[in-house]
Every structure is written in C-alpha cells, then in structure tokens.
Length: 181
Image (cartoon, rainbow, N blue to C red; front, side):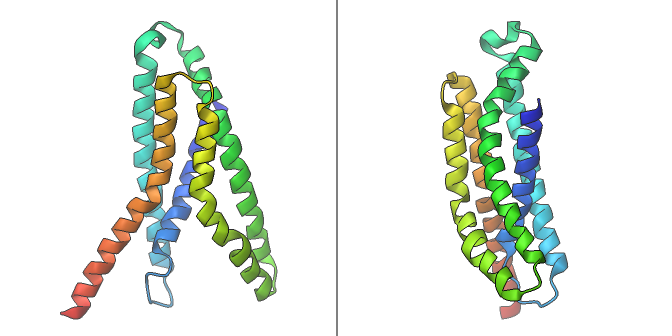
C-alpha cells in the first residue's frame, strides 16, 4: 500500500507543477501570485479527477475476473508491486529536480539561472519520456488487465498538462477578445 500512496503523492505534486507550467509566461502582470496559485490549484484538481478515474478503474480491476475470488489483501499487494517501478522512476526524477531547488536558496542570481537553464528546463522536456519509461518498466511481466491499468495511470499523468494548456489557451483567447472590444 505504501507504493500506491507514494505514487498518488508524487502524481499530485507533479500536477501542481504542471499547473504552474501551464500558466507560466502567459500573464503580463508583474504581481501574479494569485494567478500562479490558481494555476497550481487547477493542476491539483485536474489530477484529483484523474486519480479518481484511476481509482475507479482499480476497483473494477479488483472486482472482475478471477481476482474477485481472491482475498483483497493479495490484490492490493499485487497493485502495490505494480506501482513499485513507477515510484522508483518518478521518485528518482523528482529527487533530481528537487535537489535543483536547493540552488534557488543560493544568494547568487547566476547560480539560480544556471540551475533553471541547465536542469529544470531540460527536466521539463524529459518528463513525458520519464513517465513512459516508468510505465514500460512497470508493464514487464504483468497480465493484460493490470497492464491496462498501468497505461491508464501513465496516460492520466501525461494528460494533465496538455489539458491545462488547452484551458489556458481558451482563457487567453477570451482575454484577447475582451481587450479587442
């Protein structure tokens, strides 16, 4: 059960960062803490919806087929074991990116900029590939229904940021229309 909880926690934190990234650079205001927080909350709520969908799929997985006769503890242990590769890959990636945040505490501006340009920027670009790599590792040696559940979890994680980008583009179009009138 530990891996499932860790996976949920990392997914929610990743969604908050996805929310921030979807709104970064799209607002011309100088003081935009409220804007950034609203985008972070949007990412969190989007991932909570995706996590609810994944939980519903996991419940269907537990209650169908030959698993319905097995003890629930065994099935949860199987799900937890399937989440282990995802937790390891996402955890390694998240740890690397969080270590970069230590550079932001350094008082020199150039050091902070270097951390963003050399690590956080490429890390953002590598994130989808990292998620796919973790899912492929988790798919090794599992049955088809569990594989479908793993693919769903990875798709939800990959789909949060594009969904938020569509939301941001729509909001930006509406702002432009209002300014044009």
